[in-house]
Length: 68
Image (cartoon, helix red, strand yellow):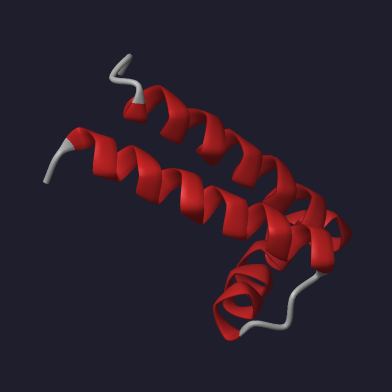
């Protein structure tokens, strides 16, 4: 698989994670991630997922441009 496809996949996953944290989604996969991270982050779980989503998007852009 080409490296550019991995970057695009990372961007999509990061956007979904960011939007899930923003909307406090009830989607089953997001709820599983939320339950796991609530142990450590408690009430800041959704903010953590927003920041993590943005970082994954940035890393995906770097990978898709071939800089990494």
